[in-house]
Length: 137
Image 1 (cartoon, rainbow, N blue to C red):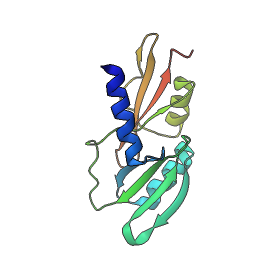
Image 2 (cartoon, one colour; image 1 turned 30 degrees about the vertical axis):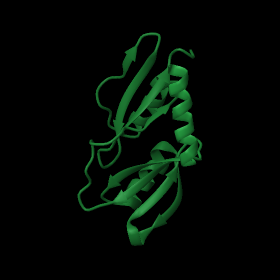
Image 3 (cartoon, helix red, strand yellow; image 1 turned 45 degrees about the vertical axis):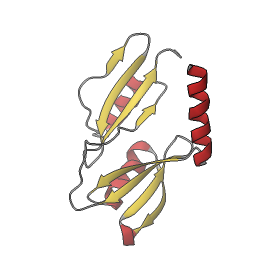
Image 4 (cartoon, rainbow, N blue to C red; image 1 turned 30 degrees about the horizontal axis):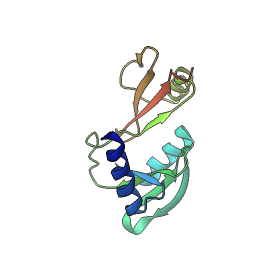
């Protein structure tokens, strides 16, 4: 049964024509300020900015995964998915971000032998997360 379910899922995905790209949309009060933060703090690259619709998009370190910033008067944060980026050394990455004043949500959590997790916030309070796969270590 699980093989049949996998085949149906693959067929459904193929029929939609997914190309492997993913853009995660976040609301912000000032897209230029937010984009500068993502560039400086996370090393993302601005792809384009469309002032007429209050939207810009940045590429991440993950192939075909972008962050879109939607400028709105009152950003609603905390209700959507949390982009979670894999790193090779979470403690080191966290220390670098903390040095730049990035706010984290408590201590790093660890599930021994499985994963380390640390949640942090952008300028508007959107949550992002780092993870380190301890099964690869």
